[in-house]
Amino acid sequence: MNNEHIKKAADYLSDKYEGHSVILYGSYANGDYTDESDLDLMIFSDLNFKRNDTSRIDGLLLDAWIHPTSSMDDPARFLHIHDGVIVTDSRGLAAPFLEKIQSIFAKGPEKSGPEEADFQKAWLQKMLKRAGKGDAEGDFRYHWMLTDSLEIYFKLKGRWYWGPKKSLRWLEQHEPGTYLLFRKALSPLAGQEDVSELIGHIVES
Image 1 (spheres, rainbow, N blue to C red):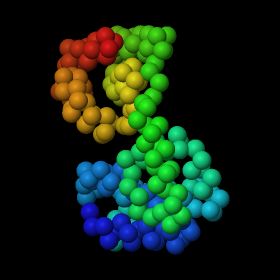
Image 2: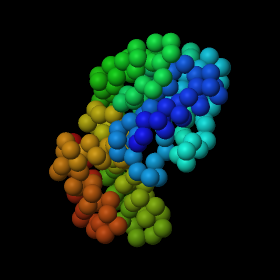
Image 3: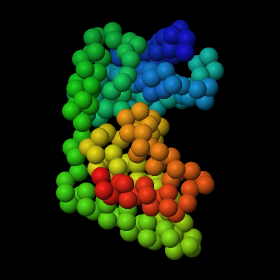
Image 4: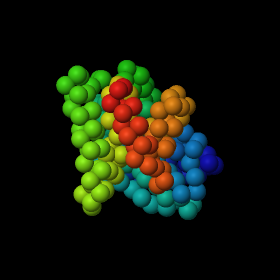
């Protein structure tokens, strides 16, 4: 990604919304963007509103969120930009703000308590049983169970869940065995044994 394009987008947003802090996050910050990726930017301004700007700059589609400066007092709301890159920091607010976010992120989420963990595991087992009914409802529950299973696994392990892309990549790098179970169960060619093996692994976590 050409830094000039990022700077141009940041300047456009800063001028339009009187932004003093612009933070790049998402795939362009991580370096794993594709031609279809949006340019994710977070802008903080003294204008008292929240807005989403999806303009195009040099052919790139922006997914820019504008927040009031006061929202920087609650860094826990912005954990999804913990790996962000500061583009503009005219008041010196972005750097300490991002440091607070990273500190909260490093502590990790609270691990599910015994009752919550038991509930989630029982739900997966119940859904697995109902998914085998062979009717439309069973098929729906099958996809519902698989969709929620990844987030449930991360919660049971006391880790942040950041959507399928980042979470599956993390598993591939740190828990290749678990990643393989998800990979097999999520495949269109998955059999009942693949899905049962995944759910069993999660329940035993």
